Image (cartoon, rainbow, N blue to C red; front, side, top):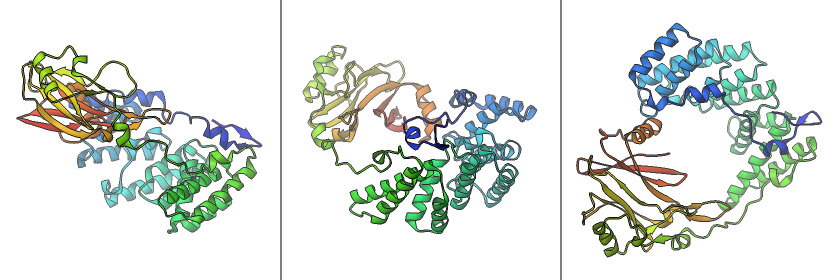
Length: 423
């Protein structure tokens, strides 16, 4: 995607638009069922790949399986994933799999021998195709977090191969700006690169990063005037190349906080009386009334929530879970059945902990509980890791900070286990 003005990319237009997709439809489709893969599926995929090493779908599925959160910490899984990546570097260094998360490794995940082997292969691939932006971008993606100097070099090579590259130019600009401000071993090289650049996208994003660092320092009481000076300098350099640049977009000024204190908002959470949930058994409703419970509702309206039914203690025994709000705190109460007068209190928290911007700068309460089964629990464990779940034969309770994260509570051997929810 390029929008040109006098032969240059117009930064303001690019800022206003979404970049093109980083991955092809086949890539997205290949990952669709990775969380469901079991040992027999892996054996079949390995046979397929052995027969057809260029089968990108099979290779991606296998790499994603070995990168899954429930397997990523295992040495044998990392080793397999690394070998699959090495083959691609050597045979298809342009493959989009190589800038995917499945091809990323931290330094502690690689032995010295593995790391040296990968860097040698990337050097050979990059030198063989210096004008192939896909190869240079993949090399940069691989060494990010491993070697800042190599990362800068490959980002510069990507920008040289494609001055309009939709993904490499902003990281390069940010790396330049932060290296200059930090004054480390890459500072002089970053300064020289930025001074030599005539890419409005690089200059504009560098100015934006300098301004962001100045704003952050100002808010923390440690403003760096040099950051503001550099922001102005490179904004003017960018504007000389593209006179249509908007100063406010490139150099945003710090804004005063507009969200009321969380405690004040929490005091105004919408709460429904117990009688608003006629589906509750009389005994359960009676316990809630005796505790002066009301049921907090997520901002935004809609159906009444936070009273749920499920088999929370054991299979084929239906109980209830309720968020019980008293004053400014809320407890998760779980009833074994419709006659339970002594529910378990799984967790208690302050309402202000669940306040967030719910749109247009408006703060609101954002907590919701739902009943979840084995598929949900296992897929979230495979996706995000966390404690290994016990055998699952009844419901868990997903306790969510809506749009952010959740934990899943599961009753096992007399205790409520805290399992991985959404991340």
